[in-house]
Image 1 (cartoon, rainbow, N blue to C red):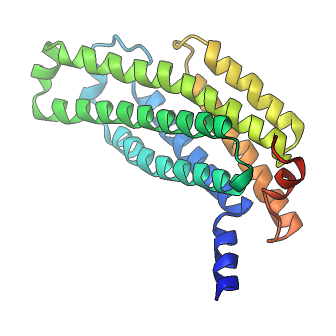
Image 2: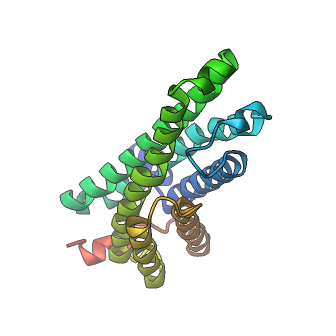
Length: 232
């Protein structure tokens, strides 16, 4: 019984589980962000005329975000579990904290956008004539395109460090993560679509991990190289 339990737990926390969660997160987030970018003007100071059009695609995008968040939480959990006793406390704090902050800010931005849609449906002219629309629209923009992007950059740095130490991915993928993270940290928020860098990088490494896992067989472990290196 203990052996069966251990085997089941190993499958749940395998590199394959992390890869699948990373792919789901990336695909859902990219789809949601692209839909929102095409449906909502990039300028946060717009007059709100886009609300008078068909907002069904925006609602779909906002519906996808919670599922992207669930996949992201699973990705974080599996990666941390594979570290096990080798997990460094400083590294774990930055990795987990930046990931949760990014997720919280993404949800907050989506909630504000959803609130704008609901308020407009209840009283269109009252919303656009008041200062509430301008505030909610600006807050949505700033939370996602300034603070969430910075947390995504920190998460990428910590994740790239993990992959360098465990040798789960080629060295160039981790170094690419550092370069892209630096881009997110120093870029100005008005660069359109810059946040897509984050899910695209997660998608790249997730696909690689999944392919390598199938090549090496179901017994391949993300933590095996880490045990050799000691993660110190």
